Length: 521
Ligand SMILES: [Zn+2]
Image (tube, rainbow, N blue to C red; front, side, top):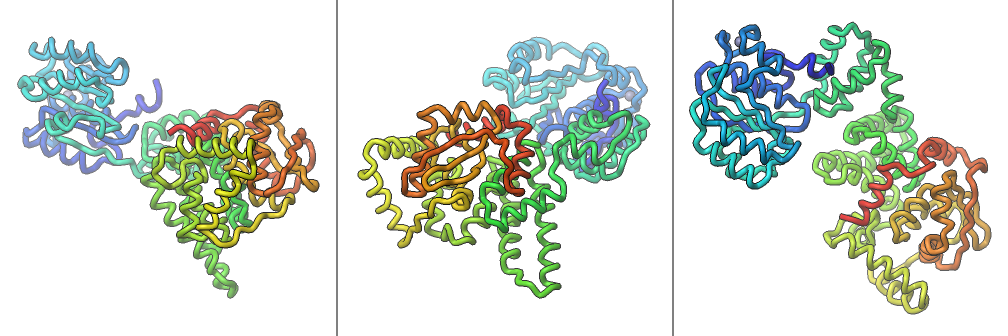
């Protein structure tokens, strides 16, 4: 049995982190005003089904306590604890979208309960029900038999018809606080005889992001030989740690957009909690700022970075694409403050071009990319013709456009722009996996470790896309040579490369998803 099930709360007193809900339900049990239909909403692992099962016990307990707590020892309580009560019907709407179950429910609901006083229906992931199943359920909810109670649970309340919601008493289960999760983990660790480092449990709790079930599952996975150690866990989770906050800051100061974006990408791949990373980063910046004040240095730039990342912190809460606010923050710091983008006007221009393909404007993404591809194709055929209108368009927004000289430094500086100029997702991805090694007068040498990416880029039509992207930026024809990456690189690049090498053999699922996502909405 998993630890989560073993330590599932069996009464309201042991329900973690949902004090308001516990008190409200206990009050209505005491007053005898239990509703016939409840809707429990909230993210996974916050205690919805556990609460539903405890409530089912309280409704049917033969020896109910004065506070409304189930006794836990009567025949009914025991039967529920052992999943044996036939009058407690649990339906998982996710499994087959509930058609058969709801039909059966309709047929059987009129019959009186067989063992206990009341029949309880718990419908988990209720948003998954089909339209027909919802309609059938609605009829039942409109006039439930006296002996029937419904507890609906969902992680996605917005998918539930208003007609259903309005029939139910609704509770929003909140994400559980880190401290509360840590307390529970300690309790379980003690119960299991695990030894643990306090910060190891905190790390697990933070990772679970408010979900107790995930936290317990993670702890179970990470309890190596009954020990929970911070280093072991952070290593296994591929977490960033302090030195990564440090190097992230260095990339920003060096204005290495590509490098900083790559670090964010790494965080996403390691499923690191981005909000938590951002918080750690801001704390780090604050320390830096205070240091600089103490030593009479200018703090203008660091304050700017703090402001930009604080804003990102707010946006992280509501974003559809988790890493987007941090990516925008990186670009703001590296490009805007560098003067490469002047905030109000040229920002828009950037967005139009789709810095990541999912940049800020409301135009459908496919369109943008189509136009990019078209532009690239046209340019191939008749260079002169297309370059003229393009220049004109740029002139509208900024008077002077500097053409960067072609050098290794400048390739690195414009790395992200080159990537953005490549129209096909998979080519973009393979190019992204490479590192610039050196340049000659008109040739760029890039290095790749993975054969997969090398093969992709060696293909002539793929290579052509990169050549066009390069030419767009440097305004001169450039050759591309692809080499095996055995060559020693400069320290900064080696650092990112060695980290990369592990998954460089083939692109990870995240990488593919991210790249494809930039093209398909
Ligand atoms: Zn009982």
